[in-house]
Length: 398
Image (cartoon, rainbow, N blue to C red):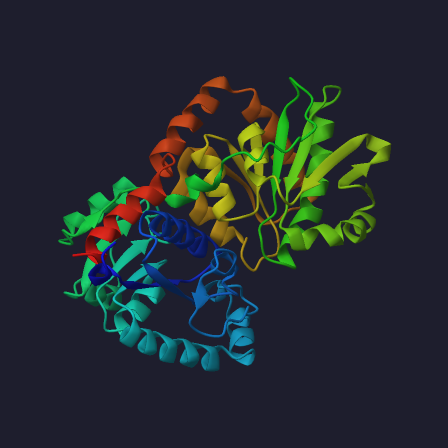
């Protein structure tokens, strides 16, 4: 790349899934344009995806109590303020303004918040609306602030997470809108990890979410569901594989004790009922690719499962992320592939209903075929990182 074309790009995003998407685009741009400089401004959490990618971070980061889901709970909003939200936000605003003096372009991933920060830089920017979809309400109506930002002459392009959303936004007069792919499907190449699966036995993935302590509580609830599922399938076998974040692995012995299970060498087991759950922190793509169905209490991981054509059964925990409000919205977003059982933290009756749903689903061949088609429509195939990188490169090097 000629020296005259060297540019510096600021990546702004606001959450775990948003960071993941942005980083996949970032890595693709880095491969295609090795002289392109990049810096990140993660607005929610620690920005670990950027850190793993070796990208400099423009501001101090902090994990707040809500985990980015303060809108779901007044109590979490209060806890965020008590934990320094105002100070953190002010630091982020100053960082955005400073980056406006050293960068050439902004790629904002998420919802209205990254769009606001992109606007504050004073630079031209692209918005990837990964947190919004026309599938939620069968319409797309931006709020007044978002509308003003999207109509700014510095907003060079609006990119969506699905084709339906792009169509709806263009109909509202935003002609610089396009769908070119969704990067989360590009991180699912299998690692070759041996999952110790028995052939011809249904495999159920446990997706607990990524945020502690919620993920730990979700796993406890899913272990109770495993018991209900095993009883529902008896005398036929069923096998469970848990895809966990690394920080949850050291807690498994304690969680087993709390659940009345046993634990050894990465395996949770209930000896009396002959049920085992093999746990992995480094085999997420393998588990998702090889499972027949997923028990979902997560956000991005459930979207990825649906994208692979897998059916997902959701049950409720105590939040803050995976509440009924979140699950019901996810069901609208992802369509027929997702079935939500219960409206509150799962009771024995709800767990029994969920187990019955799992068995019924795995026996419905027509439904399983429809899940494959639905996954392509709602989430899309791999290749999104390349599509997005190409789209914004045209703006960066204009």
